[in-house]
Image 1: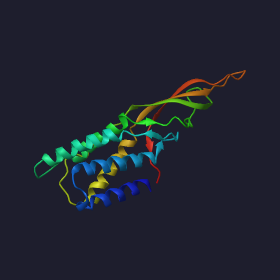
Image 2 (image 1 turned 90 degrees about the vertical axis):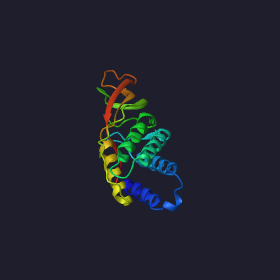
Image 3 (image 1 turned 180 degrees about the vertical axis):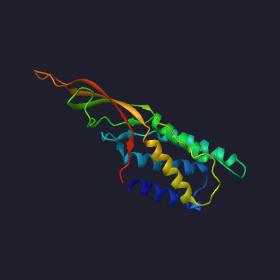
Image 4 (image 1 turned 60 degrees about the vertical axis):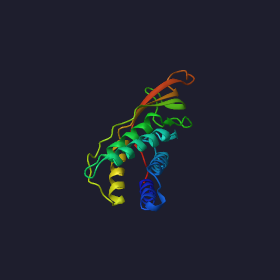
Length: 188
């Protein structure tokens, strides 16, 4: 459902050319829809969510992608490659929520009691689709964008810092722990 909603919202926007006054409108819409898509998801297996996405950087980098695309003469373009840079920027400044500790215990622990920190240590990699033929079919474009996003989400990495319970006798109070993670899931 989430990728479907992203697709519907982007297509509805892109097919309303009369309502788009300048390329910044596209940048704003893409940053908003990408942020909403990611916030509907969670870190794979641990169900930690995004508290604040890097939408300002996404919009800025998408503006640059639009400017570059407008400067290219007719023929092949690499607009989606440049949009990929805006996606990486989102993750470089994203902040994970500290409300729910990861479900996977920290290394050596039996249970996480609190999440004290969460860092994105690798914003992932984009497999750029490469030069594309110009198209006036928005659906072809959005489908390629979704494939790029899906592939990217599997490469995001980070570290959780927790307070965790460890198997000791007698039982000890929670102690610091850490756990690395990889991947981001979007339901549906």
